[in-house]
Length: 264
Length: 315
Image 1 (cartoon, each protein chain N blue to C red):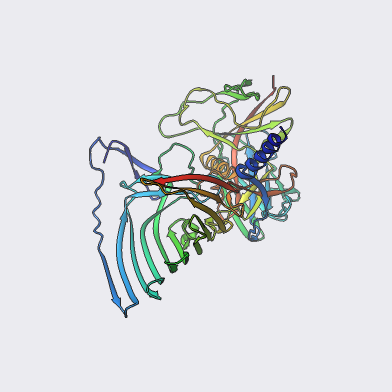
Image 2 (cartoon, rainbow over the protein chains, first blue to last red):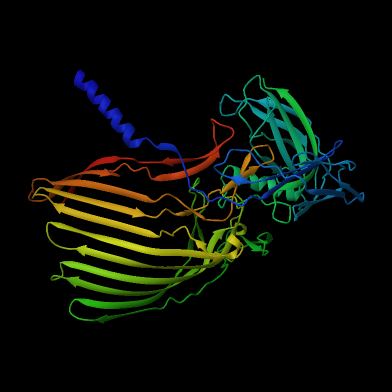
């Protein structure tokens, strides 16, 4: 009996040593980078002020503290209403608007001059599609985490025009890391009940989902960002931005609506 | 041949027109002659010089990605957009044998120029089901190097050692600012050692060791603040990094069993990766699950030690 036990243990050790895949945190010697400007600007169909945030990139091995960029000249022009707004820096790296208002159909132009580096972008706010309701359903594969389903009616469009959506999920007031963007290429004109592949949900979680109607360039940004985030892209690159001048980030004029629920 | 949808593309890769060809209809014909010429010059009884030129074309293409997370390779045929890959190769070598042909040595250099090389466009998605052609870009390639080879052919101990120093690069408009970059096949150093020793009449030992420079891959260089308030990784070019170097030692003992009239048999005890080296399979960059303020690189490796026993017989 004793030999038998010993043998068992020996087999176990052998199997573990042989077939166990190994996972370890390694130190990859990555080059250090020249800090790059990161501009993120949003205009929403709700009362302002709207803000533009400017930071800089850091090296991979540094802590996640991103330097802010102060003293930049930031101007947003509502091209449709012919209205120009010079933003004021309200906190380091954060610039707020004063007079312009976010209106569907209007095109906005962003101008940033940060220490002589000029970045520009334009974005047109699409028509509002409202998030009608939000519910959860059991996972169809018997998993224990319920799925989140937003319901909205996608307006029918003719030809090669698409509606583009961006979703931001908050679980218990914490933003999800998931980047979720979709177009209506296959669901044009339908009532959409497509699950959101965001965070794992448990009964009792308080979930808020924002649905934004974005323009095509901003959709390209979020969809390429999503590939980069999961490293699912064949060729990881920085997301394709609508900013010119070499900055990272995006400038988006979008509509926004949201719903909150408690997961059952 | 037809029976599938083909695409007429704009220069930026968007689809201008979808062409449907009927089954059995010829889509595109490529005729590429493949001339080859070789010459050797006998210097004396034991040494010679050889040189050759060959042209090869390849109509099936392996399309690999440059990350380390998803080793998703795709094989595709040529069509109206994907042209056959053409390689022109020139080689020059010196060959010599020693001590009544018991030892052999060779040194060869080569240069290869390749046309119609393929790589993914920036930001291409490999996991969706949309047409492949619009995700590709085409360019040229070159590789050159030197191979050294030494072999002991007779005696109780036999074996060989080979070493290759090489470079393999591609240049494609629209990737890495149109400059040359290391291809996936680029392994600067490639060393292989094989030895066999006849211990006794019954027992033989053999071992091989391989080492090569890690493949060129794309890693993030930095990070920045993303839309949801989390770090987004910053990339500064394709294939700018290397996987860690790969090395592995395998050993085996062979026992020849009793000879029979009609058959012979042997048992082989072998150990794959005898040093238990953790060669990386993938490296994933992620947020540190234990510290929201940090990011980390995690390496996964497979097959530390793989022992095996096999029984061979010949009749």
